[in-house]
Image 1: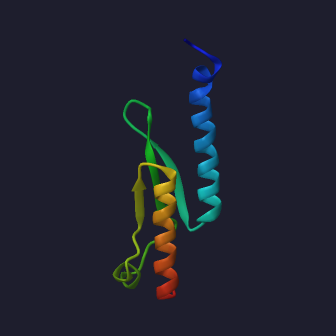
Image 2 (image 1 turned 120 degrees about the horizontal axis):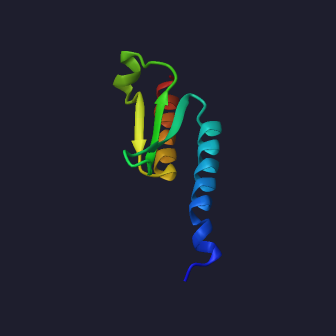
Length: 91
């Protein structure tokens, strides 16, 4: 059975990922966030890199320069952890 839902599923996934990217980018402006594709051109996860390099003090506090996760929710959770560390450390 090849219904409309099956044909539009990839478009739905693309639209959802585009929305997730927009939300993450707006929520975490200190990060450059992108979707990753594997060698076959298929979706491979999410990557976030800070716009500014970290100082030794920031790294010692637990901040990291980049994060990779398999889905947008996991990436958002880790970015929130990073924000919390920065806030607690006043960085």
